[in-house]
Amino acid sequence: MMTPLTKEEERLLENYDIDPEALKSVLGVSALKHSDKKSLARAPLTEPTCTIDGLHAGYAGNGAKTIVTSRAFANWILGLCQTSRLKPF
Image 1 (cartoon, helix red, strand yellow):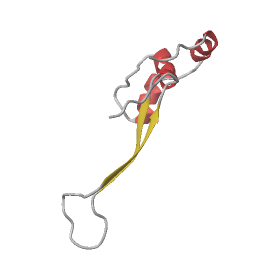
Image 2 (image 1 turned 120 degrees about the vertical axis):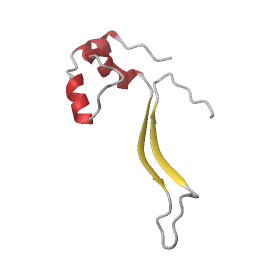
Image 3 (image 1 turned 90 degrees about the vertical axis):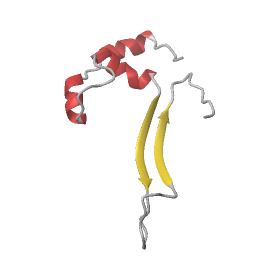
């Protein structure tokens, strides 16, 4: 459950100028989860996010290489809403 936006926050979002078509072009994608201006401006502020910022797996040292790795690493960032609660997984 998200915290509802205030009237002032809603007003500020209405004035936020974002072009969904230009954003798709810059990102090199054919579709966005939110395709209208209002939803696109509102989503990063009101919905949780998960950003994968880097992945590393495999063997990078000297010697023989195999297709099976013993370790994999991910750098990820969770953006939670004010009312979000983490649950163990």
